[in-house]
Image 1 (cartoon, rainbow, N blue to C red):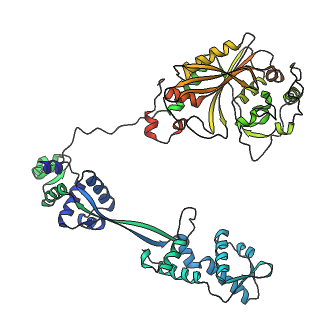
Image 2 (spheres, rainbow, N blue to C red):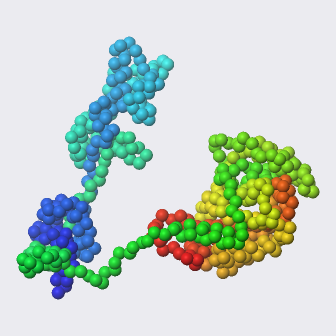
Image 3 (cartoon, helix red, strand yellow):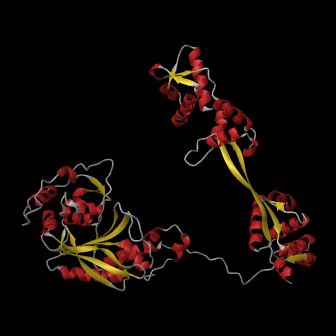
Length: 520
């Protein structure tokens, strides 16, 4: 009964393959032999063998790995034109017969081979004494023969027709073949060595019993009853394939937005619903807007916290908008008209123009304050920021900040704490949150918002505070301004229930499909 049940569950390819095993007797059968006996394609044999092994009807008896070597496109080019060392010697001797000589630069100018190939060939020939460097760097072919050139020539001609087993060559030839074979970081080589795995299979005890039944033959298996079969009665001589209705159907994965994209859209929707306007700014920013306008002195150690990426070219912006550059410079040096004593140093306008990748979303807020914002007004930005940071479960080198400011005569620190509490509950979906006092050069008083992650515990979301007059007044704003910059990626970790910030950008589609937050 067990054999019959197993037989009824077999695919036609499996039946064909087991019948081939039965024909071979008790001897192990190789992949190639199975292809001949079953008359199946190699891909069909491989697929059916995988199924039979999973059902424990067939097992691997032996496995032998054989290395084969053949020519690449580069090798066929060497075969036609000669290898680089052979070409160098031939060219130099021809030039010498005509009373001329070549330098390395002259050889490169002929563009016969890439510079890296010529350089390696020249080093080899010089080491073997086949060439000598004369006055002015001129190359002279000597009477000494290069053993490598001769061996390469022989190997190229031996392999021009077809691949051969690597072990069929002499040991010194094998060494040379491996040296000039394609490998990681060195694709432009004349030889390619490939390993072929030859396996032999035998049926298990259950597999042997089922194989006998497969070999004995039975009615042709069909999967569908047709009108013609009913008319001519041929269905009586057919074996209809059985269906297992207990098998789970294939899961259909409908298209949907990425969970993190859904979260970002939700955050924007809620902020717009609260009356906020979106503000935008460039990813490539000047130090002026990213730090100087925020009253962060050019010598201050707080700049090291941001550990910014500097743009290689161009290194500086052409200008910084006036009168903001002059007003911020005066505030840094003497306090300007803010009533502050400033930082008391000579402001460097050249450094202010230095280009960087935006390290904090507050740079967008600074630009907005300088663009005559509405008063009262509420603004937000979902700003992509970049910092040279150590990547771990809660840190990444590029990340989203939810940046925001609120301006108005009646705005105060309590307003800020209320907004931060709403953000923690409504956006991060955090069950618990708390505040810690903090220091930032551009806000006073300042605070940090922390929320409890279900697995990681208390986690900082970001900083906030009341902008100092040294920030707002040089940019043309005289009313109180509260500001915050929170890590959107960390908020998403809590909302989506993930434990590693890198999972937000996972390439595992199964994980992405099943990732759903409490807002979904």
